[in-house]
Image 1: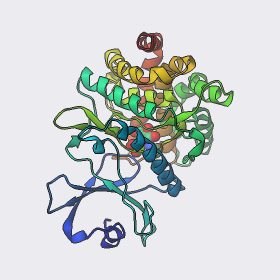
Image 2 (image 1 turned 90 degrees about the vertical axis):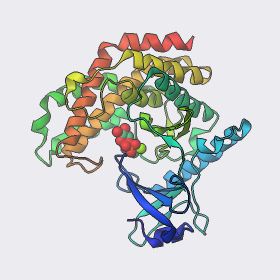
Image 3 (image 1 turned 135 degrees about the vertical axis):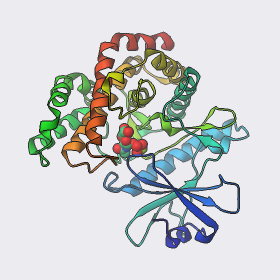
Image 4 (image 1 turned 120 degrees about the vertical axis):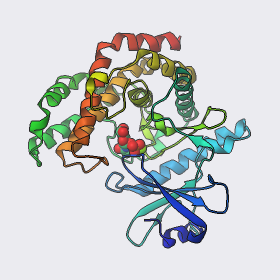
Length: 365
Ligand code: GN1
Ligand code: MG
């Protein structure tokens, strides 16, 4: 996987490094390339970008570079001791590109490993949720003055839930793997809640809500925390940075951080939205973004949480019907299980929707 050819392309010598695979993401292949001579934590992250998912990976790297330049200017303003760890620094090849296509047509990139840091797959306390909300909110706020039109839409209609519902219907009609029969109740729910899940897409179509530059994949393990201070450092996984809604980033974070269970908990009776967790995250996020958001955006945040949860439930099920070609899976039926978990969470959010909206209002005054 990690070859001499690849390391040489980025100016490194394979003999000096050892390689560990990191298996967290659902999309790319990720490796920690660690310098044997230096401390255990010095090195680089190498990633092979999934080109089934990202059809034009050069554009992904273009977006990341532009956004990183902008974030760096913000950073330099009030630089603290460890501030270099607040962003990712990509390595260039000798011809000045921030990626390398290897002889097997693999699309690779490399960036500095943020040392002395860790992520939470499941935030452990309200304090962590508050800090996580602040960090994602800060990230969005730092990009409030970045012109969304200058970025590529690297996955067209990525969070266009309405378009995804149409595609879901097509895939269901084709039923290539004879799997539609396994998910009758799930399909029924997804179709019955389609109108509510399409509201944000329609607001965009009708230009009733502004597009910003958003992260679009704000799972809670996409914030790195410092091992000593336990404070957030970097926001990572910048692949899907592109025009989007504030509600997407708030919503996708709530989907993982505000739930009582893991994304793929098989026992759906354990899956709920935890309003205390929701409130802690909301308090942090809204405190950072409120000054730059319009009233309609503030009002859309709770809907974003429902929409992102519904949407990924629909996406997992679409992928199950298509034969598990998009998300990496750990066992047969994993995408079906994930979809059921997300549907259980989306349903619970509908039950608590008024309280969720009220909590956002409380912190945006
Ligand atoms: C994927 O790569 P990862 O695991 O951060 C997916 C997200 C989904 C998420 C569900 C490019 O994110 O959209 O919300 O899985 N990324 C892409 O866990 O599709
Ligand atoms: Mg991702």
